[in-house]
Structures are given as structure tokens and as C-alpha cells.
Amino acid sequence: MNLMSRSIGAVAAAACGLWLAGCNGAPEAGGAPAGGDAKKFVTEAEQKLLALNNESGRAQWVQATHITVDTEALSALANERTLSAAARFAKEAARFDESRQDPETARKLRLMKTGLVMATPADPKESLELTQVQARLEGMYGKGKFEVGGKALNIDDVTRIMAESRNPKELLQVWEGWHTISKPMKADYRRFVELSNKGAKELGFADTGAMWRSKYDMPPDDFARELDRLWEQVRPLYQQLHAYTRWKLRENYGDLVPKDGPIPGHLLGNVWAQQWDNLYPLLAPAAADPGYDLNAILKNRKTDAIGMVKYGEAFFTSMGFAPMPPTFWERSMFTRPRDREVVCHASAWDIDNEEDLRIKMCIEPTAEDFNTIHHELGHNIYQRAYNRQPALFRDSANDGFHEAIGDTIALSITPEYLKKIGLITSVPDPSKDTGLLLRRALDKIAFLPFGLLVDQWRWKVFSGQVPPEKYNEAWWELRRNYQGISAPSERPPDAFDPGAKYHVPGNTPYTRYFLAHLLQFQFHRALAETAGCRDPLHRCSVYGSKEAGAKLDAMLRMGISKPWPEALEKITGTRQMDANAIRDYFAPLEKWLKEQNAGKPVGW
Image (cartoon, rainbow, N blue to C red; front, side, top):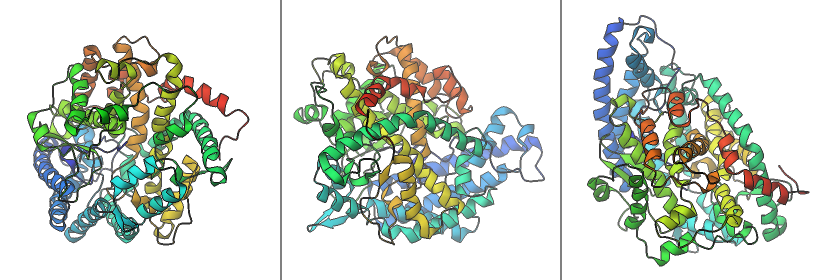
């Protein structure tokens, strides 16, 4: 599944807005102005940032849906104006003493100081250079192609081949080909790190990574420890899934897959090995066929892109949410245009921070895109809910919340739901649950270590712990340690494999996806209880539950006006993120995996 959203004007350097979840920011500067000046400053800054952000959002939309040298340049200019203003206001906000302000003003000051994903340097030339470099990096990814047998392949072709082919030579050729598109990014990325770090240091942070970690209503070091705690909760389940996948792949590919080491990255059905659900036919347990194939159903019904999106919209309206506005259908990009280059990576946009909601996708009639549509519409529903808040509070409680909402709804894409909307005629009996859970685990559980390691790599790069000459080496060390995945061939000295993942050249923080993959199960469990579901958690769907919709909406409307633990408590009744919900959801599968892995190596 494509995992990325654009909200609060879709600023390139801040994928879920200029003002992400914030706390414990840059050190206060001396000589703070009188407390009464802060409210006036915040009001004026908020209005200016909103106007600039909307302007930048429109430029970003044009760049993403019509990639040219000119749209990249215009986008960079608009983005530079917005980010420079945000950085300037962030520095001014640090002059005020938060303890002397009312709670709302104090929180807004804090968010202004900690909300940037990319802080531009004070020097105007360096500020413009940084935004130009960032736009160029994203453009290189969007235009990325390589040739095989005289045919140019783009990321759509790569995704299809990796999903469908089981020919190891073809998979290796395509994997290596896609990783050539990121080689030219390395010099620009090195400069990007230098300039973005300079901007972060001017705000009082050690580096850009430290600035990112300051956004979670807790000290940065505490947040890093929180991630470690959550990973340790779920790591045993991942290891069991990895072991089962490895020996099943070894049965298919022989010695190409080691019996007790990391799995070669080109064999997992995804060019980044971030999700393994395309391998399900190879891994499916006996007699696990649920009796339907959603891919085939959608194709046989000739479901077009609009029809796919209508299914997603209908889920939310069944819970009491308003339909998408007419402009959503007029202005969204649902398919790949034939006449221009675009960024097909699925994303949700709120162009004017009010009602101009859009999604950008190149939709195919597949089960994966069916899920992705629900995910992206979840962003739009969240964006519309918090747009009643003051501008600085128009974002999710933390960035993991934004990603979690749509996926929470996607967890309700159960056989029961598919039957209710007429896509299948009967619901498989519980004996088929192992297969259904395995398929979902190959998506959700397989993703967790990748969701964690992308930013682990970037934080080390931003801090200087990993110098440019070690970029690739450190990337594969983390992938081995966390994922148990190895490069399928020796990597050339000039390789820059992290750049082959959109979120690196796109400068989109990635820890949000790790958090979202855990939070969605907490949310799902809480909403299922509200909906009165008495079935096993993995069989619960909140489709049609107005009660669950009202509970969800109450949390969404908060935006980022309160610390995220308060938003979490609003929907789950607890203030702590907890991976036990995901273990509960997959408990029957974990038991089954341990039985299958008995006597076989676990770990790498």
C-alpha cells in the first residue's frame, strides 16, 4: 500500500502540514517580550502562514500532477516563501515565555517552534537553494525510469512486475534497474542534509533529526525510547512471520534463500520489501482459500477509478460523515494522464484548508488500491473535521494519527463488509481465518520494521553519525538488523538505495507510518467495542455504525489543539500507545505460525 498523505496545503517539506504534532522545542532565547505581545504575534503569524501555505499547496499540486522544469521551479519558489516565513516565525516564537501565556497561545507558540519538517537557513540564497534541491530530488523520483529490453519502465511497471513475477532473474533485473534511478540523487541529498541541518540549528536544534523527534509531546530522547518499547512488543510476532516466509520461499527458490539468514530483498513481492502480501499465493496455508478474489471481482465488474473511490466514500457516509464535496470529484487525479509526467504515489490533499479536498492516485481495479482509497479518504475526513480549528491546530494529534485513521477503516474491510456492499455473496466460515489473517499480516506486520528503520537511517545521517560515504552501507545494515533483509546483489560504490524510496527524496518523515500501524489496531478495537461487535477482533467491521462514527469524529475534531495522549484517550480510553492491540488481533495467527515454525530457525 502506498503510504503518504498531504494535508495543510500539501507543503512538500511537511507532508502532513507545516504544523505537525509539537512539544518540547528549541531552547528559549533571552529577552522574551512581554507576555501580552504573544497573542497578537500568534494571530498575525497564523493568518500569514495560512495564506502562504494555501499558495504553496496549489503550486505543489501542479508540480505533482504536471512535472516540468517550470512547475518544479514555481513550486520551489512558493515553497521557499512559505518555509522561510515559517522558520522566521518559529525563531520569533522562541522569544516568548510560554509560561506567561494562556494555554492556547502557549501551545501555538510551541507548535510554531517544533512544526517544521524542513527549516530553511536564514540566508536567502541558501534558503532558495534548499527548496530547489528538495524539489529537484522529488522530481528525479517522479520521472524515474530505466530500460529493460529497449522498454522504459517506471514505478508503476516496477510495482506490477515485483507483485506478479516469480522469476528470480527478472525480479533481480527490475530491482537493480529501479535502484539506478536514485544514484544521481546522492550529491543533492548530501547538500540537502547540510542546508536543512543549518536551518534546524538556527532554530536551536542539534540537527534536523532532533527537530523531527521533538514533535511528539515528550522530550526527543523519551520519544526514541518509546519507539524502542513499542518495537520490542511486536518484534516476536515479526520474527515468527519472517521465519515462516523464509522457509516457504526456500521451498520455492531453493538455496537462493538461506535457511537461517536474511531474505534477499527482491523476492518479497515489493521493490522495497516493505510489505509481502503479494507473496500470499506462495505462503497460503492449505484449505485457506476464502472463496473470493477481490482483484478478480473488481476487474470482472469493470470497476473504474470513480467507482473504486465511491466505495470508500460510502463507508464513511455509512458512519455518519458527510460525502466528499463536488470539487473533490472535479479536481482530484484518479488515473495516470497520458500526456504528462506525474507523481502517482497516492496522497490526500486539503488545498485551501477548508473544503477543497482531493486525492492523487493512479488507480487500478485491485484489492490493494481498494484499501489505499479507504486510507487516503481517511486523511480527507480528518482534514475536514479539524478545519473548524484555528489554523495552527489544523493537523492530526500526532502525524501517526493521520496515517492511522484511514487504515483503521481499512481494517473493517472484512468479508462481512464486502458482503454488505454486494461484492461477495457469502462470508467464509471461521476455518478460513488463518489465511485471511496471514494475508493481512504480510501487509501490516511485515511493514513494521521498515516503518521504523527509514527514519533511524535519516536520524543517523542528519546527526553526522553516518557520513555520505557510508549512506548505503548504513542503509543495508539497518535493513538487515531490523527487517532481516539483504541486498540481492553487491551494491556499487555510487549506489544511493535509500533514494529509491519516495519518502527520502520527498523528505517525508516515516516514523508516522510505524506509529500508524500500531495505533490503527488500538483505534479499531475501541471503535469495534463502540459498535457492539462481539466477533473476534479481526472479523469486526464498523461499517454502518453511527455510534463508532460519532466517537471517531469527536477525536478528529480536536486536531492538534491538545497533546496527542488526550486525543488517544478520547477514542481508546487510555493515554499510552500500546502494541498489545495488534498482538490481540493476530493472536490466532501467531499461535499458528509458532506451530508451523517448530523445529525451524527463527531469526537471522
